[in-house]
Amino acid sequence: MGWWPFNGNANDESGNGNNGTVYSAVLTTNRFNQPSSAYYFGGNNQQIRCPNHTLLTSQKELSAAAWFYVENRPSGWEQNVILSNIGAWRNSGGFEIYTGNPPGASLGGMFRNATFYDQAFDISGTTINTGQWYHIVYTLQYITASNTTNATLYLNGEYNNQHTFSGNIVYNNITPFIIGVNVDSICCQRSFKGKIDDVGLWNRPLTPSEVSKLYNATVTGKNLPENVTGVKIGTIVDSKYLQVVFSQNAVSDYRIVDITGKTVQKGKLETGINAIDINNLKRGIYIFKVDTHDNFVYKFIY
Picture 1 (cartoon, one colour):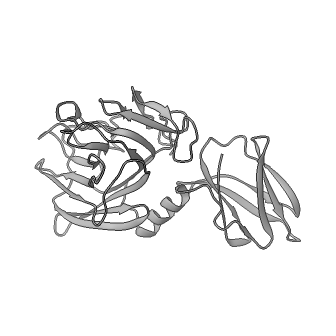
Picture 2 (spheres, rainbow, N blue to C red):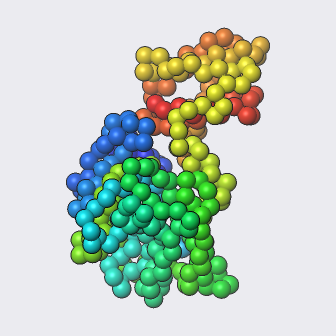
Picture 3 (spheres, helix red, strand yellow):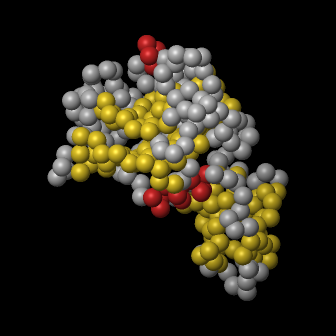
């Protein structure tokens, strides 16, 4: 439904056109220390709002994901809202991902059903601290037979906790999909303080395998593995050419895939040194694959 990698702006790069409008949040460094590649929210109603598009605010089942780095705030603040499409209190259903005030903060998912009843649960066995990036995925799966919704939290690519909520989400009064606050944040001190990056929204619950792949594709810019027989990746030359040494006596197809799994570039590898022009790629994290080497996956940051 949406993918916001924050590569210099708040545009949706999923192809669905749900570009965000930035309200006072500022571009900052991401977890790789790349400039203008994440947004900083100061804890005072800074936010990014996406359109009141039914694609974003009409789903009984969904997955939401984000990288976040939370900072300590004054005592008395209730929550740091990371993602939300919940309407005003007793006004509309929706979901929310939130964390508390570090150190030792909670991290959880909220669910508001058709009767506008808020239900929530937290991660288990760990707490959130400042000075560290975390990856959170929150999935909702509606079970028609029992009229319940199974909610699952994944932390840093791994299953963490699950809870069953009563009912399902009903969006009576549509509110935007918001990053950094919810619509009640001004009165209830729930504005996020810290950095948020690589926000994703899907119209179905991701599987544990998909969550793991999403995390592994975004956790680091290192090779995985660095080299296999017949393929070696060099440096990015002149900020536009990815150097690939292919030592097989044959031509092979290659693909460059973004972290949503979309193929963004493909071509041929020939024996010898290949200088692959990647100048048309947007800044971000990519996966380089060689069709003749199924076990070769190279992650690079451009």
